[in-house]
Image (cartoon, rainbow, N blue to C red; front, side, top):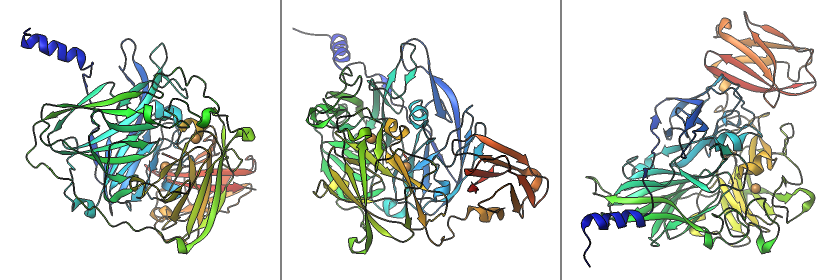
Length: 568
Ligand code: C2O
Ligand code: CU
Ligand code: CU
């Protein structure tokens, strides 16, 4: 039997599925001033009505921000929403006051412009809102973007780094839509995959070594990434930096918040299609994404078993291999960078951090989940550590489901997972670790550079529904400031006394008072006082404020300083 070319093509199209949306590649933003406009938008994801979204400089997701180690950058976040938000630089080693945590609220239509020095190693980071109780909602609607940090060590290696040509951002998210095509937040019905915001995507790639920067930006889902034909992948970076050498693998488990950079050698594969899958059928139970979310069949999640993605293999992305480019990388390097880990002999303390479900019920997989028996409170500092200290944190998961545990402000190394050394791919710098159900992991970390007597760093589960539900804590790094975090230097501002009672004085030099606005908000971002200043020193009358912790923001043009103040 003979088929015409047209018939063969038709058969090909039918059997190759309907991968026909070309993968969206977010534009690049770089330089010493980065402007991120958080805005309402809408997108045509599905047939029928458009979906209401939140995008950054666009309708869904944000630009890929490229930073170079050693540079000073002003990151301005312009909140064009009608509600407060924050913008967290996930993985970046910045002072707590510039971290974009729930303590750095940006009011509706306000601007926040932290100036940071890039101290991190070349790797893939990301940014996303972190408003307490609203993180899942704002991220689900699309507010997130990738950050690529470059440095000299990475530049000296023969690696693909031509963005959108041989080096690609791959943001993996699962979403649920209601019958009006609107996003549903915090549901186990997340069965639609968006890769960089594209449904059923196809990406043209050259026939050479390519680099995939994979970010799991999902609310709860864990992926088990690999290729249909079990193609060899080489992981070169984990969350916070390059590995010592490429790790050959065919599967990579990636939990919410985690990143990995993968090399794939497509030399000689021109005209072939390769499908990137999540091999959900191979996930052990006790993980969101496996057949059963609880270990040993314990517990259930409302609506989970009805979601056909769970425990199944499904396609994330199709690669369509085309011509090689002029300066193609065609080999996988054998060595990458030297990794320096903190010395366990120097660790001063082992902190025990316990993850549990409310009521200590192991089989409760719907939450809320607790850390050290408590739900998050903005007003409670869970512990303090000292600048310069090396610490071991033991995270013990007393629940039947794995939780991706994340720490702000630094990177850690995993010393063991359930008593075993982590595999090679998890021996590098990390900021998220998936803590298996009913097991413990130990992490070692050193607190360098930044201290703050008032503003804490966060640690939390990166399943955003768990985080919003209170599976979060906060710690201070205390000690002599190094000078890197004195943002106030730019303004020479003094706000006193602190704690205060019925009056507060604000002084500043080198600042035109007519351009200054002062705001006092509580930890939920509710506004208590807003004043224009006409001269310094200025007196604020605070007699009607109840005792508690407040944030005072000093706005000067598009610059902003936020400080914690205490009302006695
Ligand atoms: Cu990406 Cu505190 O989070
Ligand atoms: Cu973070
Ligand atoms: Cu969790």
